[in-house]
Image (tube, rainbow, N blue to C red; front, side):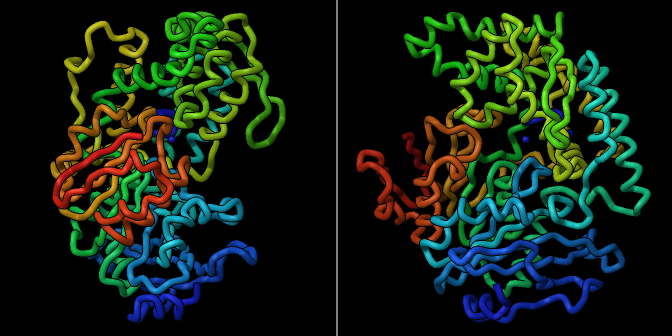
Length: 516
């Protein structure tokens, strides 16, 4: 789905680690793994790093199709463990993982240090095809170029989406005109890319790490190439048989409620901001009736930017913000200040959301092609899943979204595909660790009980104070993931960062869970 609908080493070293030869592309015109000079500088305390581009055919199995490439960065784990950990990208789908020069200098690799280096295992980080530093970069400038002008006006939700849809159409025509086969940008093809990469690395198996939509990539690799996966960690996972669109009203309602629970459950906060949940929804509606004009600093140019904040944009900006659990304490004051016409507290939130909309590293094409191939065909089309007493604003939003989704998928996948498997649960015996935040706005904790039975060998942790993406918010979870890769289901003895009362009994071939 489009971005405005946020749901947002040297080769010899590898040879020494895996004791097998590493195939390298002889030239850019051939499939294979090509080592290149790293595009970033390193510091003395960094692990040894090497950079590559993996060249694959856009259509696997068709040597006549064009070659495309995606980046892979290797960080030396300092040990002799044979199988590396592969980080499958930034999720989304369409989000870059953060391996450009500026991003990696801020420590992308260090977010996973305890997951790989502490256990002597190499870490590989990739952007999937079409995303981030991959070529082609499937970005819709035609969408981005409309954002500022759209936000300068007070438009209805559907009028706004219609303007964006015009940009999507131009973007699609541009990529089709360049000869790209857009039907190949989906999870099943990414899984084939991963299998090709594994073969080029010369390793028998990979340990997979998938966060957000990257977890769907991991599950798809496990489904299509089970012999190539040693184990996998799914962080804030999404599941093929759970369509977020079907449960949008429930998910939105739960997300806002949980974002405000910190206040409603606190005597002092609830006294200062009484009935804050009702006031939030009343504010959304009142902003749609009487939008406010705001002046913010443009997220990219830093020049003054005048925008119109209506209820729809306010809601989307808030929903984007609550992907970070730390935002909860900021929400009640924002609501109260807007009730009095003040915009200073909401300005940073709006600016962050606009920064996402204007981000020229987000792969809009990849987002749309994934959604239209592996989610939209399986969503319910009736209103039967609208809960009784549902918030009427969200009921209308769901209807608007459904209409937009129908239109956009007419663009990106005009002909139905025989892909029923993409809407089915993936069942696997591969050892799996699931990490889930109980404040996750897009994959509610309520969905987990129905999913854990699909994993024959599973360890499952939920985290009470984390939203979407556990390892980025919890160092202990990072250590647990590293121990799981090394010791499998026997890893509990190495949970040195957990209190003893959180240790859980682990039984082979039995789903188990623990909350803390």
